[in-house]
Amino acid sequence: MSAYIEHIPSELLDDIRRGECIPVIGAGFSMNAVLPPGCRMPLWNDLGIEVARKMDTAYSGDAKRTLSEYCYKCSIFEMVRLLRDRLHIRTARPGSAHLEFAKLPFAQVLTTNFDFLLERAYDACERPYLPVVDEGLLPFRAVDNEVRIIKMHGDLNHPNSLVITEEDYAKFQIRRLRMFQAVLHLLISNSLLFIGYSIDDPDFQQIWAIVDEQFKSMRRPAYAILLGSSDAKTSEYQRRGVSRVISFPANQTEYGTVLTGVFREINLSLGSSVEDDEP
Image (tube, rainbow, N blue to C red; front, side):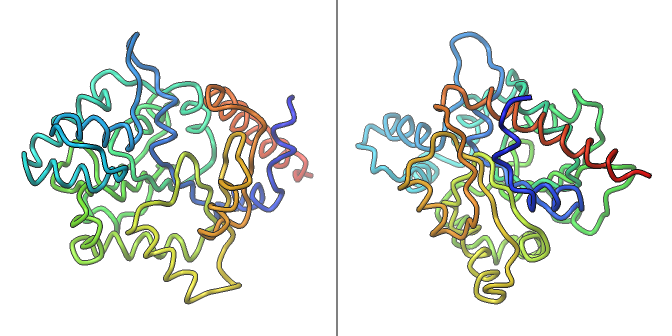
């Protein structure tokens, strides 16, 4: 076994074991997808640059603003069509990091991603899951060890649910009040583990701020897994309420390999702990 597990706080392992940890999956995790030769998975900044080029304008550096302008000047339909193509919805397959993640004993996963890599990873591991996109599914409890994949910003099979534009973010609490309340409850009652998520989304920041204001020092801890994090990046996460930044000494090209090892060793550790507790 490598030294990955040595970087994982015992308190985080305990919360995962108790079922009191919610992973928050962002666009960075999708970079681990297996794609056709010559393809790559874009981050939001990459999409902003491409959309600015399509509109023949200078990129402002703000992806949400640029995508909002494209939706206004062209249409939401054109934006969704572009996203389906650039996120390789038909061809993207989960990589080893996704597959190892799907073996972890999480009962619920929160994601802002529009793609279906988590679903395909759970399919590959033969684990049942319930994608919660329609808010009408929020009252349903998981059955038969289902994993609830709570898709906070919708997905590309439900284009009317997508949170893309500045207006979508600003009116999230009004338009998707039940989702807002469900995510708020998750953040109150669980520790968080951020994976590939930068905590930039204003709607998430609003919910996170409510939890911080209401619970202060009694707020559950938050962790983030990063690679080769600089002091500035670590400080940025800490300012946003992440109490423990777990940084592995590697570069971004090793992201998938490192995460695969981290998730595998967490699983092994949890399994060993369970065996050790047995009489």
